[in-house]
Length: 305
Image (cartoon, rainbow, N blue to C red; front, side, top):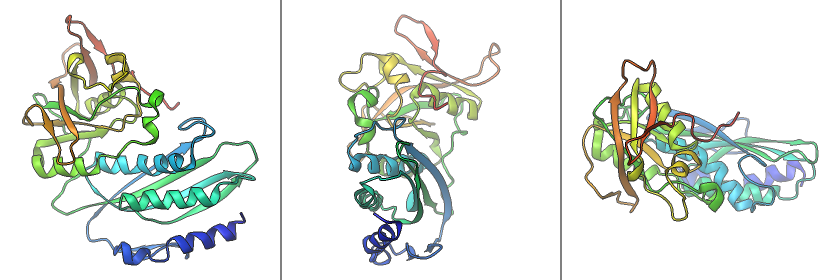
């Protein structure tokens, strides 16, 4: 498919975008899109690369789904509402699935109320990996501060949505559901008692440590409390596998146990935030085992380097 043909196809796919998404005043087809914003803007960008984030031969629908979902999950981590997205594709020369890939990208973006309003397409030499990048824009009302990684304090309780472990081995990393609705429920329910949050893309150990370092605390996780997916061997997989895309968050008051969001998502208390001791110069995520052993899990997880 020629680039001009693909551009024409995109215009066909998005012809009624302004009617479906009132914030979009001008969609694909010009040098820039035009959107209406009446709130503070939250921006994120993420990518998927063949051979790194998905295997060659992965169904096109799942490739497109994950490309969009990763950025939507980042918006969920800040408890904000999706507004729109931009997408770029680096397609290997001779790539035969450009039309289907474009259709599925727009399908999933619309599914999460984050329409793709523009982007760019380029080709690379045959045999190079397919690479997709999605930039997403979210919105926060003026009375809604962003939920960052830096607000956890000693005494806060630590929770996680859903279950953990085995995402890559099971294929769940291709079909996870970004927790936007759950994050908005948490904000509405907890208000300022929701002190920090992150999506678990790189594993609870590594991502928990990011909250700990940003907040200057220790995130202490109880291994026996971790909710495991069926087939997950143990706490090491739950903490270190990565690609779960669940929410790890801290709160100043208990949600009760067991708890579920209105979407039916389980919410499990897995630990507590404690102060950094005199023997440590920075925050960390540590795991307490049933026998009393304490393990620093800060480096357990997915490393993109």
